[in-house]
Image: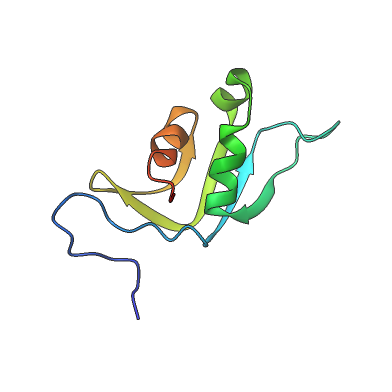
Length: 89
């Protein structure tokens, strides 16, 4: 069983796309409610936002993700775009 850590020396660690994540600060109808879904679903929802809403979006993950050697659990704006570059298929 894997705990999410990796000994991969390529600088790319596996991302657990099925973990829970919340996408916040984006409009949902007449409300601005956080949506809790999978990390993959949240990142794909962010990709569907207009540029103005992408800037203000905030994504919180169930546990930190290591990208470029830095463990991060909160992504905002274009940092979510960097995460999107790693989406599967």
